[in-house]
Length: 216
Image (cartoon, rainbow, N blue to C red):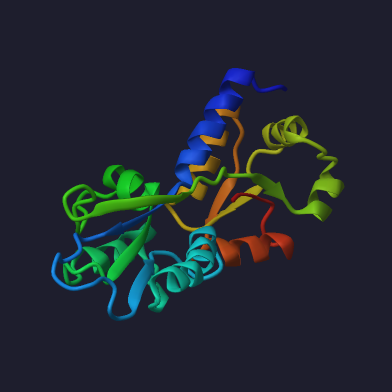
């Protein structure tokens, strides 16, 4: 089975948007020179994931540019809501920033009945850091064992073996999870979802052979 090019294009757009990262912060106080003390960058996900890696790549450069320490602080939980809420309730002085994603400022509004913060009113966007597409990846040994060489082979196998394949994700409701669910819906295939506490442990478990596929 070959996915129509139109669907592939939409998937790329959705994946890129799903991984887009932006700095968010409260308005910086006009008085005084900013920053005159260390700045905290809250990453609302576990260490080792894409958002965390981006934050740790950007932080040293910001430290050089502004002459102050930019410290990465991982505050994972509830699909990013825990970290986002910490920043929303922090002092409105620009010293607590958030590595926000489409999850914290888009997806979660639809998934959760009530968020502890307002994605629009409680934040001010600073800049787009990166747009990263989700990539479908599979354990190499399992792919060889199942005779899967490409996406078409995967879809064919998943349809003919319903319930046998499992899909790792960084947690329920995350963009990685939803990318997998979108793939299932588009292809009519079925995989059992296994949520992890972050993309790093999910990826490690997939490499170890405990999970079959992941949309990271």
